[in-house]
Length: 210
Image (cartoon, rainbow, N blue to C red; front, side, top):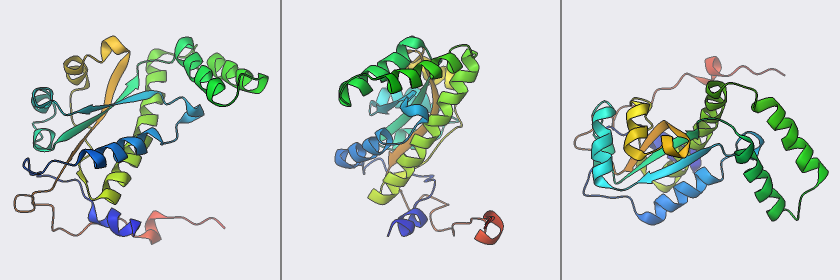
């Protein structure tokens, strides 16, 4: 049951380097991120799957020395567009036209209005909007990993500029937003593994407006 899987997952603190995540599972998690919804269907972020041990070793010191980055077998990096541009939006429109039977006035008009709204905004405002879309992808990745029995740890605790430099993201017009190591929990060395999951009760967390 899906909710049982969500209860099983936790932010794994200790991963076993000798137990890599199968590539088939990683591919499914990546596909789940690809399928995540984004504002106006722009998908204004990219996903990097870092298997390279040297790159992950370089990232670890600029991510609060969190061991999961190197003890896990894969590191997902969610990197948002640094800004919206006419070319980036047009590329989305062109793909939609190609895959949905051609351009039409409704499609063109919608994205022309979108460009009129987005393009005058500051780089930072547009980046912040794109970064929020990456968080939706993170949610899908966490849920997919749980469903597949893959351990993961979402991370905001890192120096984005240093990660961007290590991965060459600036040259691609991208900025790192989130890290998600994937691996297999080491139950013998993880202080968090056996602790009860604590969440606010529904009575205080949810307000029903009927």
